Image (tube, rainbow, N blue to C red; front, side):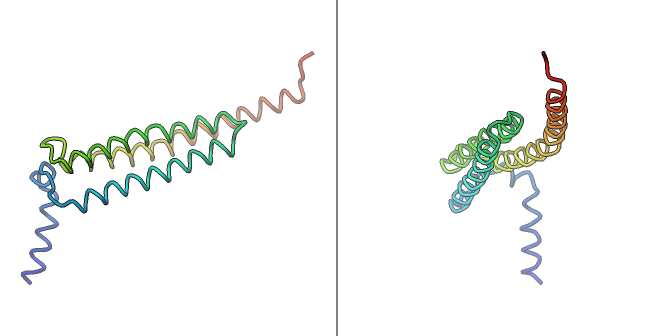
Length: 141
């Protein structure tokens, strides 16, 4: 019973203010964070390259790829700096709060891009197809 209570309190302490505004001591978590940011950077970069190379003639897909790549590159670089600050134990910049906020911003921003930009992309593609169809049949003299 005591072991279960300790595990529960360990979980509850993660939501206290002291947990978010303290600097972690363990170094394995730093390497896990760096690895996670690098893996996500590789995934986003490969998605960017796929969209750029598979749709070379279509500028709409290239703009869509840019809207994914540059913000993720920026927040990923910020995450790597935060991992470095955590490793160096810089007081305010090594707080756990910044890493969680960085991850939260990346997730929210990517969901926003998927929902909003994807619908804009579909509308733009539909407009582009209708103008191409009109140009095909209504050629200028």
